[in-house]
Length: 268
Image 1: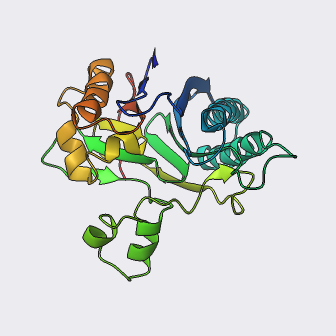
Image 2: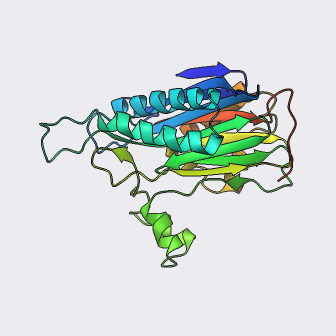
C-alpha cells in the first residue's frame, strides 16, 4: 500500500514472513481556523497475538486520522487534538471486541503512532512501540528519536534495572506494555511537541523498520540524503531497506518533510 500527499508519503509492505499485512496507515491535510496548514500521518501496527489485528489497526488509523483532521479544523491545539484522537482510536478498537468471545483469545489490539506538522511545529503522539524519528538535512547534526516505547525493555531502562544495550537484546525486549484494545490497561496517550531549528524529515514507522535501524544515528544513516526533496523515493527506499535487511515483520513508513514547502523552520 502506498499514499502520497503534499507534505507526507506513506508506504506499507507485509514483509517476507507474514501472510497478511497487519499494519495500517492514514494521512490527511487540515486547515486551522487561523488559516495554518497542517499535515498528519497515523501508523498502526496490529498485535499479532490478538484476534483480527488487521481490523484493529485499520479502525485505529482511520479513526485517529479523522479525529485529528476535524479537531484541528475546529481550532483544537495539536497536542490536545492528538490526545483525543488516540482515545477515540482506542474506543474504535474496543468496539471490535466480541462480547461472547472465547476467553482464551485476546481482543483485537494494535499500537499507534502519529505525527502532525502545523507550519514550523511538530507534534507526535503514541501508544505502544512504533516510533517517530527526527533526521536533519545536515547529517553533521544529531538525529533524534522523539518517542519512548511502551515495552518491557524501555521499562527496564527507565527503572535503571538494565542498560539499554542489554535490555533491547533480551528475548522479552519487544513485549509491549501499552496498546489499544478492550483488554488493555487504561489508555494513556503520550504526546509531545517540538520546533526543530533546521530542515529535515520526520520518520514515522513500525518496528518492521526500526528493528533494523534502532538508534537515531542508525535511522539517519538509512534515510537518503535527499529525503526532504524526494520524499516518495526516500520512503520506498526505507521500506526496501527493511526488506533487504530481513523483512521479518510487516513494515510501514511515513515520511514528512519539515518544514512543508512554503514555510520555514522556527527555533526551539
